[in-house]
Structure formats: C-alpha cells, structure tokens
Length: 466
Image 1: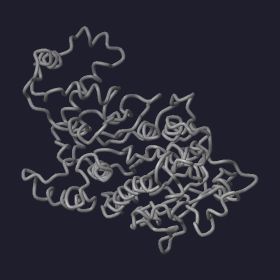
Image 2: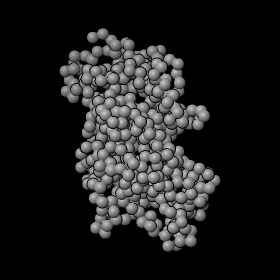
Image 3: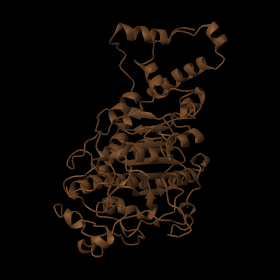
Image 4: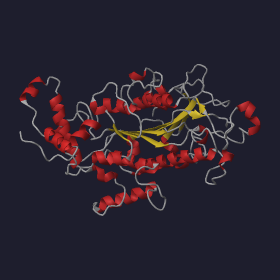
C-alpha cells in the first residue's frame, strides 16, 4: 500500500488527542460514516448547562415574595430576598416574576428564559450534601457523590453517548467543563474544548505546510502501511482502530464543519449560509450593536450549542454558560447581572431550537432535553460583607423532551431554605417522602433519554417524567 501523503497537517494528532479509543463515531465503520456525511441530526439531543460559582436561587429558580419575607421578619424566616438591592439596574423587576399562564414563579434575574416556562420543570429543595465547589459540581455532573473531591463514574453526557451510540460525527462535546469516562470505549469520550477557537481548530482542515522536520517525520510515519507482522500480532484490533480513526478523521476534516461555527460574515460562504449566519447573529445579539463577542460570550456559547445540534455535528453538548457567581462580597447586583447573562443566552438557545424544524418532525426542542445546574446555592441571608455565602439547598431546571412541562417539583423550606422530604411521585412535601439528591435528578434525565439508569442506584422522580 502506498503512503497517504494527502492528509492535512496534524490529522493524526487530532484523532488521537480528541477521540482516543476504539472508534471515533459511535462504533460506525468508515463506510457507514462516509455515507452519513449529510450530518443528519440526532433524534434525541442533550444539553447540560452549568452556572459556575454557586447561584443565588432566590434570584432565579426559588424566589420569595419580598412583601412577605421582609427584613423585619428575618429572625423568623431566616430569608431575605434582597430584590430592592438591585435598584442600581432599573431593568430588574422588584418582585417575583410569573408570566401569564405559568405555574412557576421566577426571581428577577431569570431574564428571557422565563418565556419558556411551558417547556420546563423546576426542581427545588435539592440537598447537595456539600458546600465545596468541586464536590458539588462533580456531583451534578455524574450523579454520584465524589470521593473527597474526586469524581466517581462517567459524566451523564458520556453515559448517554456510551449507551445510545449515536451516528453524529462528534457525539459528545465538553465546552470549558470537566468530563469523565470510566467504563465506555473511546467513542463515548467528549471532545474537550476550552473555547470556540479550539473547536474550530479541531474541525478545520489544516494548512499543508509543515512547521518542523519532526512533524514532517511524524506524518510520514503515519502514512506508512502497517506491516503484516503487526497485523498478525494485533489480537486486540488496535491496527484496525488506528486505520479507522485515520479515515474517519480525514472525512470529518474534508466536510469543513468549521464553517458553520464561524459566526462572522464571510464573503466566501454560500449565500444561504451567509443569510443563516446573519439571522443567528441577530437572534443571539452577536457583534454590534449589542456587543456580545462572536466566540466566547455566553451568547456565542449558546449559538455554538444550537449549531452543533442543528447541523448534526453532536448529540450531547455540555458547557460552562456563565460564571462570576461566587459573590461573598459586595453588592447583589453583580451576581444578578451575571446570572441574567446566562439565562438570557439559554433563553435564546431555546427560542432557536423551538423555531428550527427537526428532520424527524416537529421542532428541535421537541427532540432535546436540557439540564441547567450549579454546584450549590447561596445563603438566604446576606452576610456582613454584603454578599451571600455557600448554601447546601439547591435547585435546578429540566426542560424539553421526556420532561413534564410548566411544573414545580419539590420545595425548599420557608425557614432558611432548608431541604425537606418530598414524595417523588407527586413532587409535594411529605413526611413519608425522601430528600431530593443530584442522584435522583440524573436518574430522571437518563430515564427521559430512554437508557439504563441503574448505575445511579436510585429511582427517577416519576412525577417529573412526561
């Protein structure tokens, strides 16, 4: 066999670093993948959106009426909503938000996400069993309480891809967020990117010019045929995996998938693509006059997620959507503004998916499940430094396919936002119920995905399932 010298630069390094394992694309053979380069979207897509730093649930998912929970009643309720402290930004409501037709109350930082109340369930009173950042974060990622601060098990996105084996080319993307795989072959691994530029570098064909003699030798070696002796001793099939990875990565690069994620206007793009990008920039407020940057802002991250799902590039995308929430000091306004930036970006993502037809029928939100979480919440009382500290009782949001809509499930206490006992069939407080843990949330997501949830060792919350 002659050498393959037409491979783009660093093709082998991309394949090995990004997708180490048995095969790249859900166990597909190269021929099957080559026939699927039309990039049909997955029938069931998943988004995991993380708010970094520990959010104040009073400002979004678990609000309290400031007319009832007043400063004069602090000794009784141990809760102070503090909405009056947002007066420095007149765009914030001064009370609880409930859109017409909604069964859900929201806090003033919820922004445009409140428009999608009809697709979501809010889970309240989640006991995190920790107020440590890494522990709470990894607990929600995997549905298993960490050993110390070390994660246990695979991330939920990896579990989904590992069991479902989707046919999309880059099934699992982790955008500036941790990812784990403790039991599946390499096809379930997430492609880890720390920025949009990383994804572009991975998907884009590289220049043919080589920048070093060492790299030239590596690619020359990569193109050589593996000897018959190696074939003979390859009892584990590593040579075949290597060849499949080489061919599959070549196909990905030749598809020029990176063009879809370059949101700026480009005169070399086809006219239809330029129109689509212009509409996307307008929806997410990318570039002037709004000013959200095209690559790393929360709005751009949300646009990247929508593009990956709609273009059939990925099935699961996990992302760090916003940060700046670990506000122990200073005003409440900064925390509220940072939360709202994340909620608005997610609201625009859901709007995009609702407005986009899915090839299997309906719109993309009818084929997508989204989980929104943070590692814990913040204390219901403001500390002496004007901020809020870490609090063990949390909330999260689930929406889309497989999830009951326009529903509040669970409840935190009206004294100190404590975690109570909940009937997991009804979502109502019950002395015979059990507390809600991240394990139950992840089991519910896996059940909604139609996959085996036994690894969570708990039952899903039946009252949350559609």
